Structures are given as C-alpha cells and as structure tokens.
Amino acid sequence: MPARTRARRRTYHHGSLKSALLEAALALIAAEGTDALTLRAAARRAGVSQAAPYRHFADKEALLAAVAEEGYRQLAAGMRRAAAAEGSSLERFRGLGAEYVRFARAHVAHYRVMFGRGVTDFGRYPSLHAAAEATFQLLVDAIARCQRDGLVRAGDARALATTVWATTHGVVDLWADGPLSGMTAEPLDVLAEAVGHDMFLGLAASSVPRGPTST
Amino acid sequence: MPARTRARRRTYHHGSLKSALLEAALALIAAEGTDALTLRAAARRAGVSQAAPYRHFADKEALLAAVAEEGYRQLAAGMRRAAAAEGSSLERFRGLGAEYVRFARAHVAHYRVMFGRGVTDFGRYPSLHAAAEATFQLLVDAIARCQRDGLVRAGDARALATTVWATTHGVVDLWADGPLSGMTAEPLDVLAEAVGHDMFLGLAASSVPRGPTST
DNA sequence: ACCTGAACACCGTTCAAGT
DNA sequence: ACCTGAACACCGTTCAAGT
Image 1: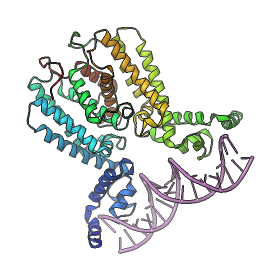
Image 2: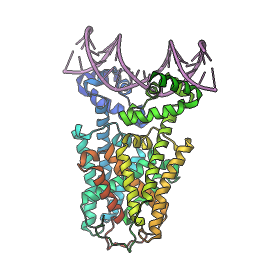
Image 3: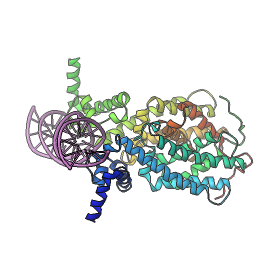
Image 4: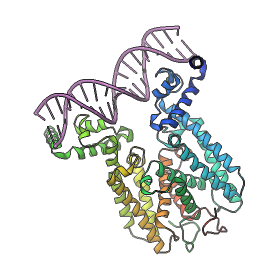
C-alpha cells in the first residue's frame, strides 16, 4: 500500500495529477455530497499540497466544469443505451426519460454540479458545452423518431426537446432541492411519471382548438 | 445621518435587529447576487458584530429561509394580481405564468434563494413551507378555474399544477444557471412562451389515443 | 516543469465577557 | 436580554521558493 502510494505520487510528476484530481472530486461528491467538493479537499485526497491543483485547473470553477462534463458523458451513455432498446420509438423515448430520472436520483450530487451554479458560463468550457449539447441531441433525435412514426405531433424537434428537458429537469430540481420535496410524499419516479404523462397529453381540453394559439 | 444611524442602532436593542438583518440580506442579493449573502456581510450592513445574528437566526440557513419566504410572498402577490386581471380563465392563467417568469427574471438572485440548495428542508421552516404552499395553491386555483370553463382537460388540478410548475421552473432554471443559457440565444420570455405553448398542446400526435396511456 | 510552504482575505460558528 | 471580541476550523487564491 505505501509502495503503491509512492508509485502513484511519482506519476503526478509525469502528468497525471489532473486526472487524479478529477477522480478525487468525483469520489468526494459521491461520498459526501456537492458541498464537500473543495479544491483543498480534492488536493488532500490526491496527496498533494493545496496549491498544486492550480497547475492544472485555473480555478475551482474549472474543476467543477470537468466534473460536470464527466457527468454529461455518463448521462449520455445511459440515454444512448435506452434509445437503443427494443420497442416503438415512443417506448424508447419514454425509456430515455426514465434513464434521465434514474441518473439524477442515483447521482444527485453529480447532477447538481451539472446543473447548479458552480459553472456560470458553459461557453467558457467548450468541451463541457459540447458534452451537454450531445446529451441534448439524444433527446432531439428521440423526438424526431417519434415524429417520423406519427407518435408525436409535428413541430420543431429542438423546440419540443427543450420543453421536454425543461419539464424533466424541473421536476427533478423541485424534488431534489426545491419546495416540492416538502409538499409531496411521492418518490421522484412516480412524480416524474405523472408529469411526463401530463406533458405528453398536454393541458388543453379536447374541445379547445389545437392549432396555433392566439395572443 | 449619524443621528439616524444612532437612532437605528438603539432600536436594535429593542427587537428590530432581526428585520434589519433580513432587509440587509435582501439588499445584498439584489445588489451583489446570491453569493454575496453571507451572515457576516448582513451583520456588517446592519452595523452589528458578526456574532450578533446568532441571537435571531439559528444559523445561515435560517436567514436564507427568511429571505426565501419573503420571496414567495412577493411572488404570490404578483401572481394574485395577475389572477385577478380581466379576461377568460385561460388568459388569466397565462398571465399568471408570465408574471412568474417576470419575477424570476427581475429577481434572479432572490429566485435562486427560493429554489436553490440554501434551504435543504422546507419542513423545518413552517412559515416558509406555508408561503410556498400558498404560492402553489394560486396555480392550482387558476387551473381549476380553467377546468370549470372547459378550457383545460379534466384531471387532478394539483397534479396538473405540479406539471406546470415543474415545466416553468425548469425552463427558468436551465436558462438562469444551466446549459440552456449557452445553447440558445433566445431571451427567457420567448423561451418560456414557446415552452408554455408546447405544454398546453402536449406532445401527442392527434392520431394517438388521448386516454390513459398503457405502461 | 511541477510542486510546496506560507500567507492573505475571507467564511460559519462558538463562547466567554461585557452592558 | 442582547451584543461584542476573540478564537477555531475551514475556504479560494497567490507567490516566492524549492527540486
């Protein structure tokens, strides 16, 4: 064990401190939650001084961006799996939503880093931006498939995907951090299922014309 | 001015430090954003020592809860105004949503305190819980009115309101802190309008049966 | 080229002491 | 009863100095 520690420590000088810090950060949020992720704690866990991370990350936000990017990759991988499952395009679309919710519940702390205020401008982190965009694109594709099969109404798939994302993220966020946690006893799955169902059906009464609404 | 300061300071000893700290907190987030709200900064602004707030708030979370509660009151007041406006129940429902979005945009920092992770359990702050619940109830009432007028489909109004809240909060949150800010150039209003429209119409193609969906 | 040690300016929180 | 002063254990960040 001490030998392994020494060996690992030597490799830090060969360029692996960056990935070691990312791993430490992931371990920290998984074990102790979002707030436990500090630059100093990550450095401690990686066995380096508090100043060392600044050789590899400009500031704390840069570390958070790396953590968030990794989260989007993991989320996208799960969603890709769900999209490739058996069933109709609509069933696969629902499976994709279920996978999103499952990820959020299983990795709340990671989800918070991905959607929280730690990274204030995705534009400053191109690879994070790309990872988030790729994740979103999976949603767009799933919706487009449903439209091709006549299971989802016509309309800009990207706009519809935005609505779906907002709705799903909204219920997750209200449940995880917001007032909803105190206002309903239902577990997230049940809640998300009901919300997804409502979103699919819409609010309009069947007697109301379903064309473009007037101002 | 010094006289006023002295007078004010004297009143702290008569029970007004609590409200002075709340005012200071509100001023801080409005002027410098959510992160500027620290217990020490609030104390400084109120002209007392850093330890003084602990006479009135158990900890930082308790101050945040008071700030959040005030936010829900303000939001509810605006929504009540919108709900009382002229027009059909559906138009008033839309106005209520627009007012929600307007509040979020005009008071982002305050909105973040209301929905962020500063207060982790609304159940521990009964008056905050009540204020949030009252705000939510305005949504439920607006939906119930639309149902009575045959403009929104039948269904548990509270469940539908949850969907509406999740969707609206979701778009606001993705816009304010999330990846959406980097992925669309549209201002929040336009985005929210489109999302609200989609939510009203639903996703289902008209050929798809609109009864209870199968698993 | 990469890391350490020490420092600075902040936090939240506690507690004895003042009035 | 209410507030202050001083302290403790943390932060993020910087910078001279080491190897």
